[in-house]
Amino acid sequence: MLQSRFKEQENIWKSHPGGQTVIPKRIHQIWLGPAPLDAFREWMKSWGALHPDWEYTLWTERDLGQWTLTNQMAFDAATNYGEKSDIWRYEILERHGGVYVDIDFECLRPLDAMHEHDGCSFYAGLSNTNTVEVNNALIGVVPHHPILQALIASITVQARQDHLIAQYAGLPLSAMPRTSTIERTGGMLATMNLNILNIVTSAQDLAF
Image 1 (spheres, one colour):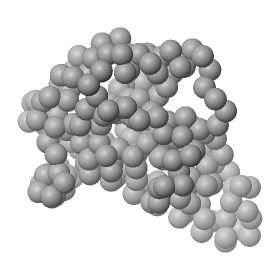
Image 2 (tube, rainbow, N blue to C red):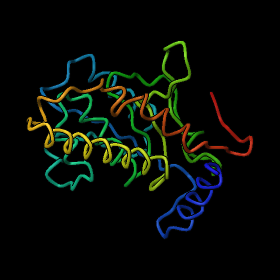
Image 3 (cartoon, rainbow, N blue to C red):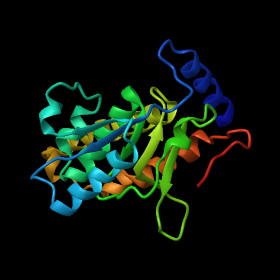
C-alpha cells in the first residue's frame, strides 16, 4: 500500500507544470550565526571550483526575510542552528531542487553524473553509524519531490504536537523536553520518512 501511495504521489509530482525529472545543477549551502571559520570557506569554494557552470547559493539570515517558511513555528522554536538549518534546507530543496550540502563538506569530485540522469530524482549521503541512516548533510533532489514534502509535513506535525502539549502543561515551549536534533529534523527523520514511503526505483538506483 505504501509503495502504491508513493507511486501515486510521484505521478502527481511528474505531471506538475513545474515538475522536473532531472535534478537541477544548483548547489545550496546555509550559514546561520557568526561568520564561518576560514577552513569552512575553503571547503565552500571547492564546490564552485568543481562545478564552474552550476548555480551556487549561500543562504544566510539575510535571506530569511524573503521566505515564508511552512515550518516557521518549528524554526522559531529550534534551539540550535543545526535544527534551524535542517528545517530550512528541506523547504529550499522542495521549492528549488538541486543539491544541498553542509559547509563542512569538501567537494572531491563533480556531481554532474547525478544531475544528468533522468532516472535519478533523489540521492543522499549515508551516515557512518554502523546502521543504514540517511545523512541529510548531502541531499540532491528535483523540485516538489514527495520525499521533501513528507519531511516538511513530519516537522509540521511534530511542531504542532509540541505546541499543544506545552499549552496543556501550562509551560513555555522552551521548557518542554526535546528529543535530539538528529531525531527531530536530521538524519533519523529523513531515514524514517524514506522507510515509510518505501521507495522503489525499478532497479535503477545509482551509487558512486
